[in-house]
Image (cartoon, rainbow, N blue to C red; front, side, top):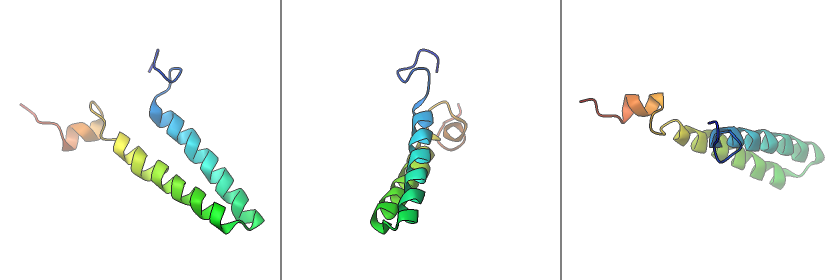
Length: 73
């Protein structure tokens, strides 16, 4: 996305950075025994990494959008 609002990156790239950060933080919390913090990080990772990223795959002009949602005339 040259010239995009996120310095040339798409929102999925920023989401990937968020997920990597949450994984690292979650492992840290597990190692120090903060189970509540670990659980929150893993929940955010699940929501961000699977649900939101999965929703991005159905963005118009992407392959899965064309396969499942596009109407062919």
